[in-house]
Amino acid sequence: MAELLQFISSGLTVGAIYALVALGFTLIYKASDIINFAQGEFVMLGGMTTVFVALAGVPLPFAALIAIIVTTAIGLALHRFAIEPARGAGPVALIMITIGASIFLRGVAQIVFDRRFHSLPPLFGADPIQFGSAAILPQSLVVLASATAIVTLLWLFIDRTLLGKAVLATAANRLAARLIGVDTRRIVDFSFAVSAAIGAIAGILITPIALTSYDVGTLLALKGFAAAMLGGIGSALGAVVGGLLIGMIEAFAAGYFSSNYKDAVAFLIILVVLVSIPRGLFGRAKVERV
Amino acid sequence: MRALLETRLMPAIVVAVIVIILPLLFPSAYYYRIGVLVFIFALAVVGLNLLMGFAGQVSLGHAGFLGIGAYSVAIGPIHFGAPSCLFAGAILSGALAFLVGRPILRLKGHYLAVATLGLGLLVAIVLTNEAGWTGGPDGMSVPGLVLFDWSVRGAYTWYWIAGTTFVGGFVLALNLMGSPTGRALQAIHDSEIGALVLGIDVARKKLTIFIISAMYASVAGSYLALFNGYITPDAAGFLRSIELVAMVVLGGMGSIVGSLVGAAVLVVLPQALTIFHEYEQALLGLIVMVFMIFLRQGIVPSIVAVLDGENDDPGD
Image 1 (cartoon, rainbow over the protein chains, first blue to last red):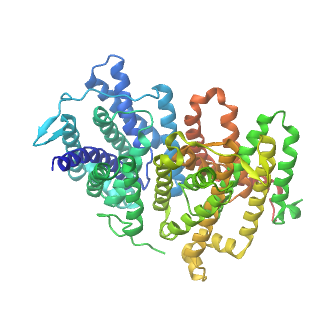
Image 2: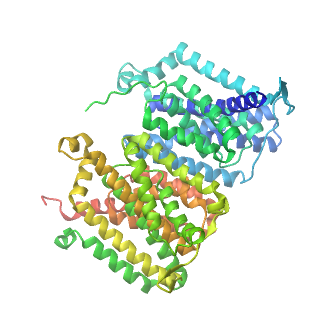
Image 3: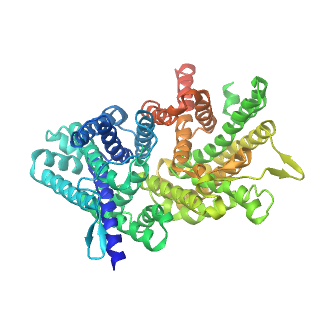
């Protein structure tokens, strides 16, 4: 029983991070039909920038803020300088551009920062809290609470504000959105910026638990992507549920089966989901026109 | 000249001549080494190009097949005492491609990209974790190739082996594209439904080309392992897969000559820039981005387009 609780808590923590990455994917995909493989690099940049700005003597909260701003700017730059000029390219070309961007950002990160692992001090100390017979890190609770807050805020924003409605309109039909006066280019800009910010926050939150280095992005991006796929790509609810599910399955696989193969779980899920239920758990069936 | 260029095998003859003449310009064994690497990668890229450029199916996990080829020439002799199983890897890769091909190739666009990526990563994870067989993340050494008491080693010998195999693979690819299967694949590329209506067994043709391209990558992997004498799971990794795709798009999707050009650029460039070793990843990323943004057609098709524009403006 203690084991079970332990796996659930660690699975939910990691799952919350996957969910945030998946949410970033979803946001960009909704607004622009682009699968952004550099999403994991946003997470890495958030963590690494905070670490290095803090090392330079800036108090941690400000360092985190700076990291979020820097990452958001990079997200915007990615859209403006890499995606925009390639408008009209096919899906494979766009995937290659974002993969190129991801490798580029990683390469730059290992020059600007370094190639070592780094950590951040947890927000409320490192002493685990006892829940019955399971021990939970306070930072895990911080991760879960923040992820919940981000998801709620994002939902409120999309549902209640004019800009949010414009995002929905763009997602539904880009041409129609433009006809009624939505500047769809700005909407895509916006979705890249918000995705980058969410990624950066995820990176800052997870660093005290999971460490960060210049190359953590790839795996995170792929798992976040697996989460988005599992939930049904383009569905925000699906992204969150998918992320939590993958985190849990991974934790159980690591606990009961083999921790060496825990990374394989996400990819097996991708393959199984794609082959058996390509639209995911919450995705809408796509009708293809000939 | 144009009439000559239009015969199907002309490009193969040009490439064969390049393979033969190139050594005259080599001042040292180091250049032979680079030549070998170019041909080995070009072989894998030709295979991937058949899949991507002609059939229009993307694979972001081809390094997985490369890895299977590489490890089979190491595991075969060491664990089974089988002498240099040069083609065991190709058969194994072909079998894997056959097993997973049908369900995966039903997918399109991003979905196909991600499924193949997952497949490649699974292979890399298995190679990393089965340390008893593969030596784990540190890799394993590969016994040298012995063909009938002749132990094959040295960059010079390998240059001719890799060069010949590449030209062979090149001719095979050209012929394949000229065959009914090749035409069927190009029809699939243009419109899957159109091809279906014409009576082409789309699923089967896609599967065929997937298997063939997996075998190309696998043979290249076997050569790479035998030539280097050492292999690590990086050979099957995500970056390697991306590098292969980058070579295809750099040279030009659907241009078999482009495969050689793409492989040459991405093999030679990092060697030429060894002083900037630290910048290698950043550079690879930048090259991929810039090419996909500004020169989406790739080097060779762009050159061909420019030449065509100059030669035959008013009515060809």
